[in-house]
Length: 341
Length: 72
Image (cartoon, each protein chain N blue to C red):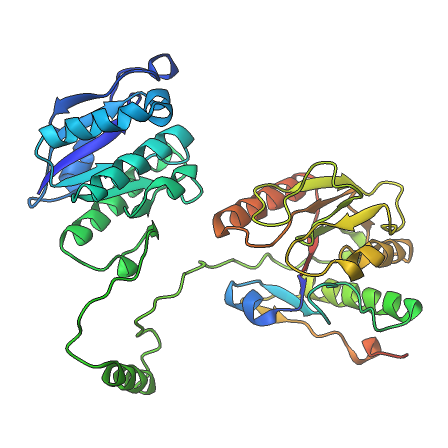
């Protein structure tokens, strides 16, 4: 297939932020990361042209999308690949819109970016292939992007392709076997010991390596953390009650318990009546202080970390976890007790 | 982790779990008297200390001991 690669001004070698308003342009063949992408696409597909545009221009000027599409058509594209944009917001939005417009125009189109890139929501019907967070992961990101593109070009269903994070719409297709036959076949496969056969793949959350145990809680600094959205009354820092994109920290210094009326839960996923009557039901500060006094734990970390675990994206949740772990480790905390609603 | 939805926590691979009595109050139980609830809360934390002091290789549930039973 004839492939047109879309990238931004930076990866096209035009310039950095100073060139972010550069208008769309087309060059023959692959440039920048497109060279590696072209090689990974194999003999069946060739990057015949590269279209690029400044990030500001592409993300904020509605006319630029039409210009980009004209340049793509002028190269007789059959497939459009946009990115990888990693975590860059404007670049991600541009890549997603280009892929979405190309898909709507009847071309095969994919974009590549990190799962929490705001562009993920902008791709219309075009699939997005997950990339790394930064350009340091260019190599593996391009490999995954090219592999997914080859499989989409070969007509494979999106649901089975590794790394596709958006637009995994279910497509109707005719199967030679009836649903009853397929169900019995899957059941028989299960009885034969095949635990993975399925028509509906479930998301893979990866694997968390358990931290090693602590030697002695009586000498350890212990932290309380929660996704129960307990915040000071009035929610001064505006923690979201659902789909939180952030977490907050609050001091526990001088506090023996979380007093009703001074703290509240703003979690949007359950009735907070019990939590607000006694916020220690979410963040067990009173009992933890008691154990600190009794010498059961060395001491309690001076802050608690909190978010709202309600419809939170896996990507955000993973980021919170990584940030919490790194923050607590830096502070010398040996164990964290997380309350989960 | 103190949580009520153990199947979900297990599925996503939470290493150390202590089961609680309700989604809206992971560290409490409003059906108890204030005093008993406080004792239950401490039992949950004591169990959590056992959990963080124990070597695990996969999602593991640490059930609060009989001393934690409702006394009221």
